Length: 82
Image (cartoon, rainbow, N blue to C red; front, side, top):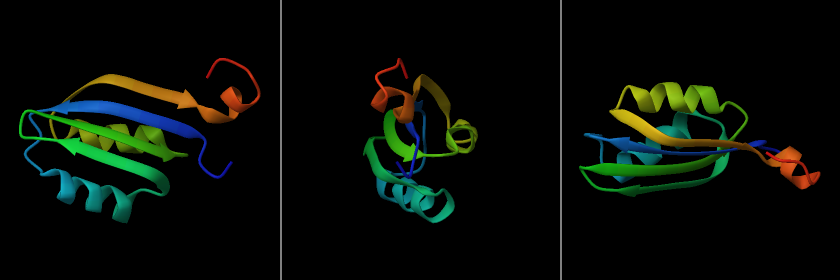
């Protein structure tokens, strides 16, 4: 497995549109399976990466982050809680 952590969160009050946020994440954080959807009220981000703390740290600069989920997909693949 190339990217270990499934990282998901919501950002409230993000002033960046979803296309710009998508482009920034792709250009600045190594990972795959990126999904960014939302509007000016709430943005949802889903990303597989080995450095979820960096993604969280950046997203916290964009607005209030909440409903944060970071799951270890390697543990899940071995039948353990992630």
